[in-house]
Length: 225
Image 1: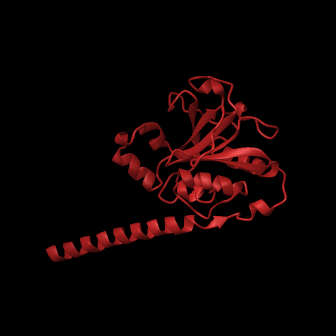
Image 2: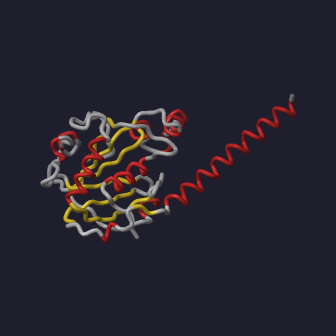
């Protein structure tokens, strides 16, 4: 009996280790594969600035607050932030696990239940929005000019990520600072679909350079050196 138990545990541990090894290798290798690599060769008038912004772990897609294609102020209101400052030029969108966003302000606050739900894709999600007056380019902030046609596709992708695309549901009483807010979103976070996967897919939707698939921010930024 003891021998069979030990054998079962050994195979279980081997299976877990093999899965983790395959996962890490897949993440590293697939993230290096570029899609839309010929975007610079396409003859389109690129006039709209967007940014990809990372905090070292999580990637946001940053767009103008208002232009002739989209006025985000109609759905993401300045009054829903603590500062209520309307003199902002850009708005960042970051999709993610609702439990992580709302219940884990610091890594020390992470609960096992939150981590397990996020890992296995059984939790709900939220959209984090942050207003900026301006952004400074650097290693973790890349500026891209895109066409109006592609920006419209990006707008549609972001809007469709909210649980209610036409009237985003504000999650009142939650923020990281004075210029941000949370909203209910569609989908579930998992090992295979993270906040960075969402951001990477946003770039794909806008026909911009992106990874074939990635779960971490470096898988996006390696295509924008």
